[in-house]
Image (cartoon, rainbow, N blue to C red):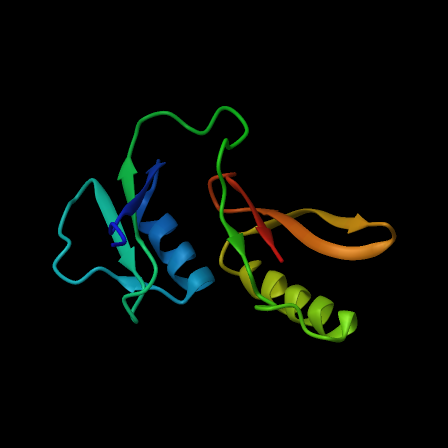
Length: 127
């Protein structure tokens, strides 16, 4: 039996972070979650974990030990150009929401993924 779980995240601005990650992942605000010091988002289809953002006074100070990989291309398409197009489109869509591109990662000369930062500087990948 699968255990339901929530990914808990520290944030200086929980509502902004919840809005960003809801946009990035296709999540929605958690119904009934009312906490002035936090925000929570859920998968509207009920499959993925909830993600909670709790206000903390300090800013991020070190590299993440765990991060989210957004699988924009889903299962790898047969055509590498299609995969790259899907990844680039998703990464570009996150820029107006506050994301920053750090670098593009290549493996043996082939495009792999894009490393990005969320609005509070947390690393994540679009693959």
